[in-house]
Length: 303
Image (tube, rainbow, N blue to C red; front, side, top):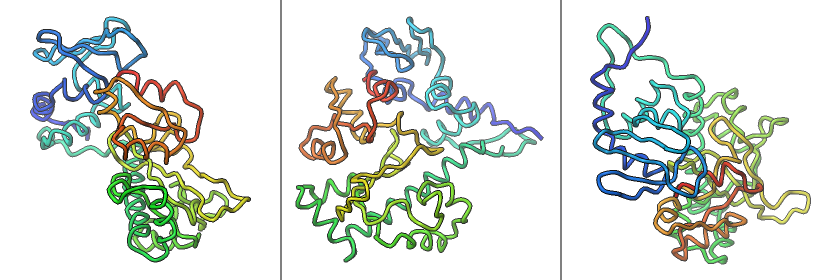
């Protein structure tokens, strides 16, 4: 039987979501009378043509003609289905999701479900790497390295820096012990495609890569043993929950400062970016070891 979210829930989500606050997470907005204006988050522009009418809970761009309510905005920005958008906004605003009488809760979109499951895996793995760095003997050399580089304990905590052990087989055994299936782990990007039991990252200082909402979606790893046969930095490839060319390192921390200062610093690497943040210059980001892409510029341009 088809499944339907109740009209009551949809109305509650729309009423509970402040359209200015929501869209303000994607572009810088300035009040003009009762309304708000900013650069359109759907296309690149220098002169603001994006307009929000809070009373009507409606947005419209006079340049590209994008328009709608909070539901339409999230569907377009996050590339979600209608039902998944309601769930996204309900979670954000604390609204209980109810379904029409006689209908059951729908099965989530398989791709979205798998993406969320891998985000959960990466969050857990990042926490484990962080523990190994800050609380164990084997993580001490990596901790001493970044301490000598001037990083404070607060910065290490903020960026959730970690350490991947030299033992390439330890991670697979550890995660299997946490009831993750071999098939699931095989598609995670955490292991070699050719040697499925071998960790992709080993004996490296680990930099969790966050999405704009602050969730860990990928990793970067810095070499610690100066092996000439191994790259200094190793980065996650594209994954279901992560697209390298559409993500900026530290953007989740920087977007507020970018909006307030109307400027952004693009850094070459993770450590440079972190150093700026530690010095209080929080509008710094890094393009994850790739050439700067149009999509990455599009992330910061509206701010």
